[in-house]
Amino acid sequence: MVRYILVRLVHALPIVLLVTFATYSLLLMLPGDPVTVMFAQGGALTPQQQANLRHQLNLDKPIPVQWLLWVKDVATGDFGRSTQTRLPVSRLLRTSLPVTLQLGTFALVLSLILAIPAGVLSAVRANSWFDRIATVVAIGGVAMPDFFLAIVLIIIFASRLHWLPATGWISLGTNPTRALKYMLLPGIVVGFALAPLTMRQIRSSLLEVLRQDYVRTARAKGLREQRVVLVHALRNALLPTLTVLSLVIGRLLAGQVIVEQIFGIPGMGRVFVGAILSRDFPVVQATVLLIALMVIVANLAADICYAVLDPRIRY
Amino acid sequence: MNAPPQQEIPPLLSAHDILIQNNLRSNLYIFIQRLLRVRLASFALAIIVVTSVLAIFAPLLSPYDPSFTGPDPLAGPSARHLLGTDQLGRDELSQLIYGARITLWISAIAVIAGGTVGGLLGVTSGYVRGFFDTAVMRCMDALVAFPSLILALALASALGPNARDLVIAIGVANVPWVARIARSQALQVRELPFIEAARALGASPMRIILRHVLANTLSPIVVQVTLGMGYAVLAIAALSFLGAGVPPPATSWGTMLQLSFGLVNQAPMLSIIPGIAIFLLVLAFNILGDGLREALDPRLSGTR
Image (tube, rainbow over all chains, first blue to last red; front, side):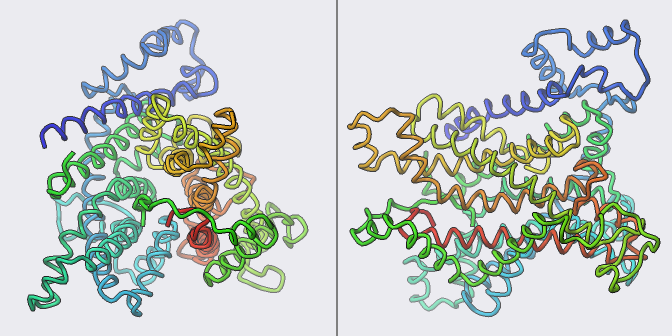
């Protein structure tokens, strides 16, 4: 087991390096000189200032050296300074990352609350009316643009019914009930986008498990159907669901980028979009890298959990 | 739903099938029949055809110039403006039609380009294997780590918000998914006897990859490309909504939503109309992709 985990970690290493390179090379893709593009807002710079900046940002060195120096800085938590505010990017991340993690966890939990019972019911009563409706909702959920769902929910619950605030954010620590109110709509939007993936996966793997011999044995022993499904079958059916986790996490983070923008939530997604629009490259790089690393870690965690939980898998 | 296809290779075609296959017309006919048997797929196809016709003939079909600012802003639906007007008095329907044009145009080029690159990369790595395969697939793994919307946004900001760079951004996001599927297919196809026969006849690897392997991996690629169209439509809308899409005066559905978002209290319809358009088109591509998967499945491809 330890060996398997080590092998997986070693495999992930080149991917992490490639990801950092891809992130760094965003800067190289800029049309024209990065210094003039990045600092265009500040008015014209003298050639001397440009040269200084170029030296400061290592842009006068060969590209592989630039990249390695950047990775070295990033590894110590130094993402440089925002070209807009001149503040260290790490400070920006320290305030926005917890917000994103909090909303993300909430949305993930909501999606599981939706997806697991729906997936189980769909599998147990395959081809019933419930299954058909759930399938239609799932297909619709995948096609629903999250920003549109957000707008529809704002129209209904904020501007018509006045039940929930349309925009804003309160940290969970300050006032839990009010924080929940602010979190509910964005959480539903992201959770609804994730649920179909998990639900369909649970449905298909549970259907497969329910056909297996040990399930028949459990039934033959006279166990109640509920126990057979929820205790014996579901445990094995949930395992393959782990494999869609990296897709789910990717969607989660992408969904948050949009939702944070719409609901005015001061998380990493909003920082990212702001940086994109103002071409604040150090911030773009830092957020993109963090997001990609989260996906890789989720993937790795899913693989390792899979191996730990399923004794049939031995590599 | 996203589990990798783990099915054995289908049996070789029977004489009857080969007869059918040799006759392209009846083959196509059977295929279309199979596709239409999936009832939802024909509905989806209808949506796509209608949208495409509107997009292609936009200058003829749209009642107004989409950027013409009329005298009656925020008008409701009427005979003059079937879907009403926006805050600048522009005709909503005309904007919708021109938005379809831009959306379909960009997503089609992006997805076909990304599909071609991904397909060739995937088929080649699956056929060649070895170091090339490992290197390509590691790169794809790295690309997949970026959620496609994030990747497209980051690329759009680096390259600049215009149609060409939007195509590149969305195309690149498509490459790894197609490459992975093409590779897994190629790995199966390369073991089939007819590949060995081609090799024995002295065909060059290039010829084998392009004429034999690629041809036999095409159907799952087509399925993936169709599904990719759905993602592309969604991504273009999201990018435009966030302000990183096609720059004005071009209208796109995402831009329409973004502009009307501030007016959500006074004129909710202005947000709902483009939203429904995006939803329906994405839905149509997703359903068509699933329908194609089912229609192409028996014997012809080997995946489910």
